[in-house]
Image (cartoon, rainbow, N blue to C red; front, side, top):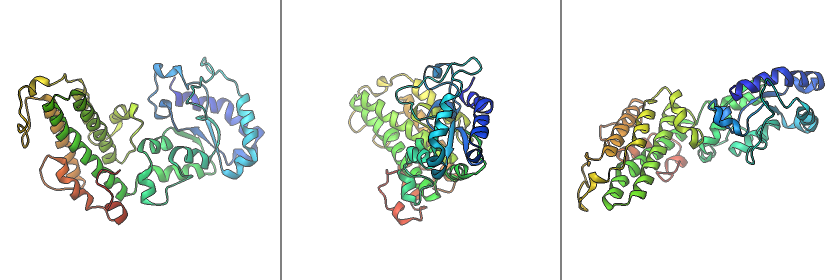
Length: 326
């Protein structure tokens, strides 16, 4: 059983009754659900995931005032709930999985993930928050929220970055894609630096995936689930399979044999299959950037579009940041 389904069933079987009978004043104000860190909160958990941080559990989120008043007692009752449920043993907690479920204050939940107790107050605050942590703050499912305070913050975060922040991040990803995949990969291969070439492609893949999420106005998950999550995107989800092909393409050292320092400075080495794949990906991204009105022109080298993208930013503090920041 998926973790989210197990969590909701467990809450309806035991948690709801516990809150309503023992804490009637708090029950009408408490938000309940499962969100935060962990593959189960993304719905990506499987049999492999069940060896840690899996089992009957849920989160209770209280306002700061309610947590100070009821938090300790609600926690005691929560910990008295049956450990096993529907044939699933009690939650196994890893060394890094503590505090993911149970009773939390709403400000503490959000602060622990994104570094502020609610919605960021400025574009610069938004920019500094790692994309994967914002993803963790809005994933999962809220089972109940009669007061609505937890969901108010959640919904404002789900509305995605302010547009200036999104555009700045897109510009940064375009710059890294160009530098790593379209430029440094070839230079590393010419030098016979195969570790550097692999690192260049790793940077390219990571930035490409983040770019696709930004174009979809969705937060990029933790790196382990970045590629898996692309299947659920509406824009350029097909790049996920192209990246899979790139990752499985064998080393292209033969294509660079006997090349000289000035070879392929302004042309592509089309004997290298990875070069062709990188260029195909960049072309698809360029088409979408154009479709969203972020750049113009047909030059496939993404770095030549970065300044055009930056010009779309209205906030001077964001527009004047270093190009790759974001």
